Image 1 (cartoon, rainbow, N blue to C red):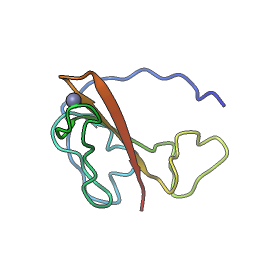
Image 2 (spheres, helix red, strand yellow):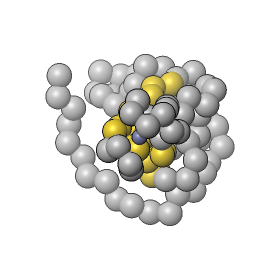
Image 3 (cartoon, rainbow, N blue to C red):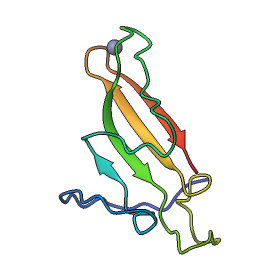
Length: 97
Ligand SMILES: [Zn+2]
């Protein structure tokens, strides 16, 4: 499976309220907006908390999943990406409703 290729346009992040924010929560930096509990990973090498880099929101969502909607992670979930700047390790976490 290969997802269609898309570019990213950077803007100032504006937090929106649920459910208007579904599909619009992708961001870099700041704090992760956890759907469930905080699952910040620990670096497997240095055992320090990893740095939040980005969260990638499900999109293509129009109230229900369709066949064209490729970027739906689970039940309109989110992928969180973390990095350890010391050890150059990366981890990701997935959560949904
Ligand atoms: Zn580390």
